[in-house]
Amino acid sequence: MTDDGKQYCDTPTKKLRFVVNGVQQDPDSIMDYILQDNDRFLLIYGDETEEEIADVMQELNTIRIFRS
Image (cartoon, rainbow, N blue to C red; front, side):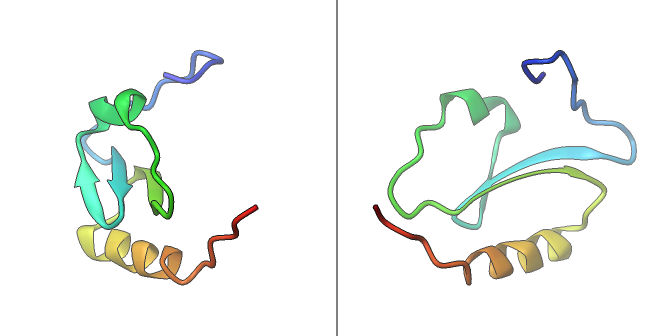
């Protein structure tokens, strides 16, 4: 549930997915996860296949991480 009350619940066609560094996590653990330096974090809600998610993660891995 977002701050404005919108809910993203699993349905027969859509799932909430939480991926860190290419590894899917339990979506219920989102609030407990502490980001580390260089983490690649993907939060996605939809009907994407595992292959499509892997493609998005591969693209995410090409984005440069800037340090301040």
